[in-house]
Each structure stands twice: as C-alpha cells, then as structure tokens.
Amino acid sequence: MKQMNDHDEFLSQFRKAPRREFAEGLYSELAEQRKQPMFAKLNPFVRRIAPALAALVLVFVATVALSPAARARALEWWERTIGGVTIIEVPADQQTPPVSEDEVTIVPSESVTLEEARQILPFKQPTWLPEGFTAYDGRYDAAINLTRWPLDNGGTMTMIDLRWESFNNGYPTIIMLRVDDYPAGGQIVGDNSGAREVTFNGLTGAIFKGAWNADTGRFEGSDLSLMWIDGDLKYLLMGNRGAGVSEQDLINIAASME
Amino acid sequence: MNEQLRGWRALGRRSEQADAAESDGLPVADWRSVYDADLPRVYNFFRYRVGDGPLAEDLTAATFERAWRGRHRYRHDLAAFSTWLFGIARRVAAEHFRRTKREVSLEQIGEIADTFSTEAAVQQRRDFEALTTLLMQLPDRDRELIALKYGAGLTNRAIANVTGLTESNVGTILHRVVRHLRTEWEDEADE
Image (cartoon, rainbow over all chains, first blue to last red; front, top):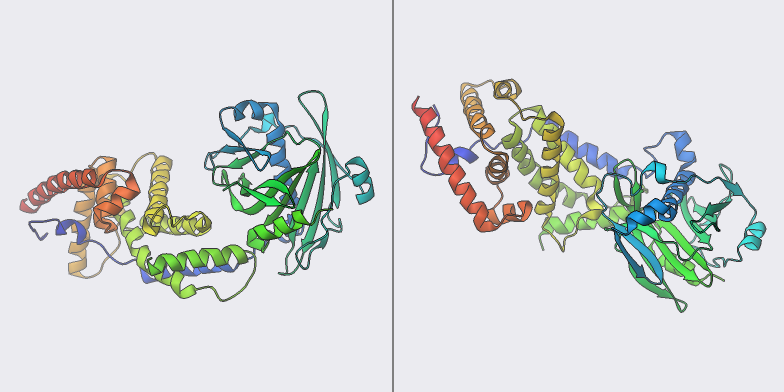
C-alpha cells in the first residue's frame, strides 16, 4: 500500500533515473551530431551545390528587404540605422517568413565576368582574404552573378555577387561579397542578430549574425554579415563563423577594399 | 560560475568555430557532466507531465536535441543553464500537447507505464499510476509546477525563473496544490 507522510515526499518518491540504454543512446546521438560537418548531413549532390544554396538564402533576404509589401510591413517592425545602413529587426522566432512567398519578386540573374561586373558597377575589391580562400571557379553555377531588381519608383537596382571559397577543412567554405547601387535598401535581420556598428578605414558599417532558416522558421545560424555604404554603393560581406570565418576576418576584408 | 555552465559555454564556443570541422579537443567531459546532471531532471519533468514510458523519453530526447542545436543561443548572462534548458522542455511539452490536442487519457496511463518485474516495483508502478491519475486532473499550470518541483527537483526560485511567476507565487500555488494532492492521496490510501 502507498506510504503516507506528513509532507510532500509522496510526490518526489517516484523520481527515477532514465534507462541506461536511453541515456547512452541519446548521448551518442548528440555526440555524433557534433562531429558532423555542416554539409555532411546533405546528400552528395546537394553538398556540391551548397555554396549556391547559401547564395540563395542571401538572395531571399535581399528580396524581402526590397519588396513593397515587406517595406510596408516593416513599419510595424523596428527599423533603425546602424553604421549608416538600415537594419530592420523582426522577431527571430516568428515561425513564418518575414514576408509571404507571394510578396517576393523572383528576378533572374545572369553570369558576368569580373571586368564586365566592374564596368557595370565600379566597386572596390578586397586585397586581403583569409588564408586558403580563392575566387570561386563557377564549376556549379555562375562565378559572378548580376541581378537587376525593379524598384518601387520605377528604377532598377543593380546587384553583383562574388564568392571566394576555401577547402581548408575538407569542405567548401564561402565568403560572399554583394554590391548594389541602392544604399537606401534595408536589411531584415532577426532580433537575435546582435547588430552593432563597426568602424574600419574611416567607414562605418553594421555587423550582424544569423539568417532566415525556412526549415525552422527562425532567424538563426552562425552566418556573419558586415554591411556598409561606400560612396554610392552598398556592400555586404558574408561568411560563416561555424566554418571558421570570424568577425575580424570580415572587418579585415572590408578594410582591404580598394 | 557553475562548472557545468562553463563547460557548456566552452563547448558551444568551440563548436561554433568547428561546427563544420571534424576537429577534436572539445571538452567532452564537461558536456558529459552537464548531460549527466540534467538528463534525469528533464526526464522526470516529463514523467510527471505525461506519465511513465517511451513518450517521456521521446520528449526528453527532443529537448536535448533542440538544446544542442540551439546551444549558440544560450546566453549565460541572461539565465542559468537549467532555466534555459527547462524553457526548452516546457516548449517541447506545449508543442506535444498542442499536437495531440489532449493529454494522455486516464485509461492510457496503465498502458504507457513501464513494465516492472518485482513485486515492489509493481507496487511502485501502481502508486505512480495513481499519482499520475491525480496529476492529470490538475489544471495545466498546477501540473507543470508539480512536474518542475517534484519531477525535475527545481527550487521555487528556479521555477519562478522558468515560468515567469514570482517566487512567492510559486510557493503559494505549490502549497495549495500539494495540500490538495495529499488529501486525495490519503483518501485513496484509505480505500
């Protein structure tokens, strides 16, 4: 029969240790996850195109930042200027995309050479990169992308993406540079981005972390971004902290731009 | 600072740097101690929420997997590690109840209980089934507080941090609920 007492032991007496098999199995599972490289969970084909997938994330984030509907909704969000660029903070845990898919304009991009790109937008290029990084050779998709986005005012925003990659860790790590001629355009980030101002070479910019993850419905991840305006152009550098690219790396790259 | 928290933080930082690298040298022992200390607490939290059996294990695993994936978001300056972890456990429980639309029915309690072989264990199992039946009849908030206090073994202050209630409020509610449960428990024992 149940044992009685004057206090509350009758409630805590039923605690018990988890089964050993369960405890050890779960621990092993977590330990295994820790060992897996970022792209190891992907199938071989997807792993090969992972750099391109990362680029798509960037495209999406830029797209929502430009959508008129997104801009309208942004009035309800926290918009502020950090380091001279417009940062729009939204709840990181909102579970739904910052804007719905029907509010997103899909714009095709085209492949251009570096010379062509610099004729279209006279942007600066980094003279320093972390050790092991070389220009992406375009073996899976365009090495340098040119995209023209329609603007609300009838004009066009021209945007150019360049990438560098490293295989230091046995898998592709990328650093991306995005340049556009629409400095007024903002950037949507999660409210967990830790956006803050940084200074380099007499310029100011905003550094922030994370990106929208449609699978989890969150702004998350260890992507790092540095955005700044230089002249008539807006620059965005992006790398992955989990893959070894640090904030200081991004700042050093930005400071080396000529 | 708690050594376990330091270990978790160190692990998180190191892993951020090596998320994609198969590097060695992680403070595995620290992660192990964090895991060993908190696994039984989370597991028992769920046992007191959903009863004994595989479901409690599944929800425990979901909590640790989510905590592991989100370890970069743990802010030691905002909350103790256990507060953060039990915040995740509460969300996992809430999502489970939303998904199933109902909690485990009273009839199912026996079905999901573990199988024990010895006579004493069988009695223990019956007693826990009886307690679970009583817990299932409590309002959700009260049942959660009981699970945090007597399943996970958290202090009233820790429960206050996890739930957002004041410490005195936690104490008052628990005092009332425990008194009610003790009466019910004694009535059942007398039958």
